[in-house]
Image (cartoon, rainbow, N blue to C red; front, side, top):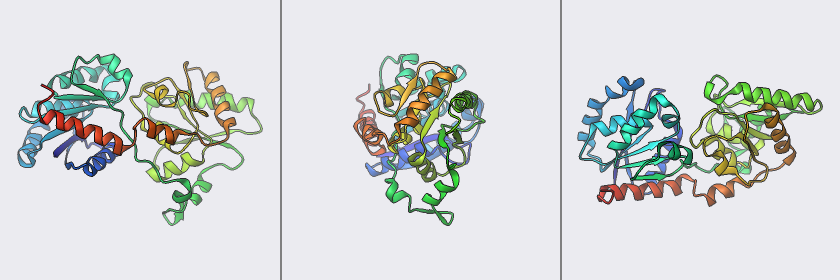
Length: 324
C-alpha cells in the first residue's frame, strides 16, 4: 500500500504526531512518501498544487492522506484518480475562516477523519467519515526513561534541575505566547491557588522548547498538568500526560472530557473561572499519586499502533471502492 502524506512543512518539519502516525503506518505495511507544503494562507496552499501533481505522477500512490483543512483542499484539487483521505485536527474546524475550506475539502475527499466529537457536531458530515483521535506512542516507564542521557545528563538529572524544590510543579499545556492556549487564565488560576496556600506554592512550567522525552520526564514527575485552551481538537498533550500518569486539570475543551472523565486525579472544569480552576488544582495536587491514564489510553485504543491499524483499514476501503 503506497501512501503519500500531504501536510504543512512551514516550520521546517512535519508535526511530530503526524510523523509518529506515519511510522506506525509503516509498521502495518504502508510504504510512506511525504509532500510538505510550504506556504501560508489559501494562496500558499493552492500554489503547491502543481508540485503536488508532479509528486503524485512520480510516486504513483494508492492513496493520499492529507492533514489539516488547507492541505486536504490542496490534495483534493490535485487529483481525481487517486482516493484522498483527509484528517481534520481541530483548528481547521474551530477557526471559522478555515472551516469553509475544510468543508470544500470534505466534498473532494474519499473519506474524512475527525479527531473529536465536537468537531463532528460542528460540521455534521453526511457520509464517508470516521471519528479517530490521533494516537500516541507510549513512553518508556519512568524507571527506564530516567536513565536515558540527553545533553550529557540523565533525564532524572534534567528533572531535578527543572523542577522547583519545595514547590508544587504544574505543567502548562502549551506555550505562553500562543493566544489559543490562554496562559493568562492559567496564571490567574495559579495566583488564586497561591493566595490560599502560602506554605506550598505552585511553580507553573511552560511547555515550550523541550524534547519529547523531556516532556515525558516532566509529566512523570510534576504534580499536575493544567490546560486552559480556548479551543482544541483532540490534544496530544492530554494523552501524553495520561500515559505518564500525570494528574490533569482542564477546562471543557475539545475531547478532553471524553478522555479523562471518571479518571481519579483528573478533572474537567465547566467554567473558565480561575477560582474554579484553582480548586480543581488543589484536588489534583492532593491526589499525590499517579493516575491510571496509561491503562485508559490502551482501553480507548489510542496508541499509534492501534490507530494505524484502523487507518490502514480505511485505506483498503477507499482503494477498493467501497466508499462509493
